[in-house]
Length: 225
Image (tube, rainbow, N blue to C red; front, top):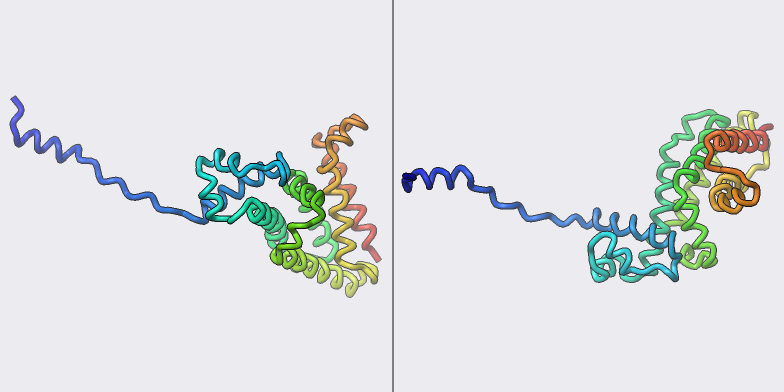
C-alpha cells in the first residue's frame, strides 16, 4: 500500500516547472506582417488586397495590424520601403569601393540580375506601384534616400574608372543604373508574355546564364574608354 510520504515524493518528482510567460517581440511581429503583406499586395494589388487575408495568414487580428501600421495604405508604403531596403542594403554589402572599376561594375550587374531573378516579388510590387504612378513612393523619404545613396556609390565607381582611364568620360550614374536594371527587370516582369509569344523558357538555367553574361558584357562595353 502506498504511504502518504511516498505519494508526496512522487508529486515532487513529477512537479512541472511553471511556464514562463511568452514575451512579446514587436519587431518579429512587424516583420511577419510585412512578409505576408508582400504576398497579398503582389497577388491582389493595392486595391484588391485585404487586411483580413493578411491577418488570417499569420493568425492575428486586423486590429493588431492597424495597431502596428495604422492603415492599409501605410502598410503598403512600409512594404515598398522593405523591398527597396532589402536590395539596397545587400547592394551596400558588395564592397564595390574595394574592387577595381570594371570588376565592381560586373559584380553590381551580376548582383542585380540574380536579385531580380530570385526576388520576383520585388519586380511585381514595383510594377504595382508604377500602376499607381508612384503615388506612395512619393510619400516615403526613406525610399528616395536609400536610392540616392546607391547612385552615389555607383557614381564613385564610375569616377574611379574615368580617372584610371578604364571608363570613358561623360557617364552618369543614373543612366548606368537604368541600363543595368532595364534588362534585368524586363526579363522578370515580362517573363510570361515573352515566354508564351516566343516559346522561350526564361527560367531555364542555360538561358539565364547566357542572359546574365550578355548584360554584363553589354554594360562593360558601353562604359569602356
